[in-house]
Figure (spheres, rainbow, N blue to C red):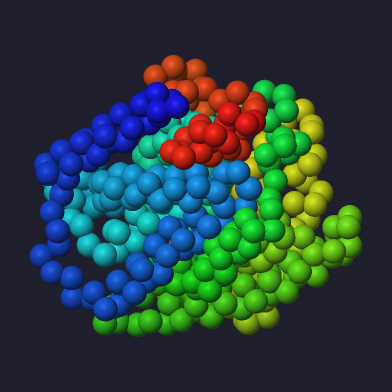
Length: 427
């Protein structure tokens, strides 16, 4: 079985060597970081979300938990390394010849962790259906497209999206879904697969991820919301708006799970995911001074929308002509709430009463709503194009694809982890 992972290990080694060379030639540390006590606590919170929250949230599959948490660990590390280079170059003008050295500081590390979060969202769409080599290449190829989208949305459009409803969540979801259209599409590999399900134990472990994400989400949305030593007004807005939206989406998701579900009982899929949708949806508007009821209403709507997606939309997308497989339901937790967040930010910045309360943020003035919509449109287009290209590459190029998975081995740790060979032989 070890031969199946040679291309994965070789690619990891190659990426690390390339990163070492790039860091040696093109990077340096900031001479001092005067605000370590401010930024480092937020970096730790964001990394807990990525490495613990996302990792354990994806352990719900009863035979794929080791791969979910293990690959989340190493792939997040790979993406963070590459994102420091790609985002640093884009943000600091290295690609335009303005600087020759990328300066590494704590805000850049936070942005790189955001990129890893977006990558783990994309990973969730193909969880259990792609080889480690395919997933690695899919995410390596994602980093430059992600950095390009960030540069367009923030540097060119000056859109509001501090919590990444559009640029992190929607981008990751639709990049992953576009790639998913190419990966493991053989009959029998979808929702009806024998291994594509949870156990009480794995559902409990997945709830660890949910609760980590839920508690720390205000830090995710507010990590870059203030200038240290200056005003923390916008960061306060991020924290308050996000907490209110999360409280509402939690309550709404539990209610919707019972009222919309066919069993009339609470469903762990909804509880693990839709309870977080408020944090996604409020991300684009988080820095605005919103009426508290607006944040609550947006969070409640996101919780219901996400739950309805799991109940009504996911089965139709898989069974329909698209045959769209989405293991973790990223379309429901990150995709649709991310679009909702982008649309909500356009609405909020268009309302005169709210615009008057947030003039310092609306750098585009009365045209800000149009730039919000433009940011959403470009994000969806780049995510779909990039994900489709990556999906085609990792399924058609042999040395990239690595070991192919037969349908019987989907959603299974046995082909990849030492000590599970006996389990592989039994199935």
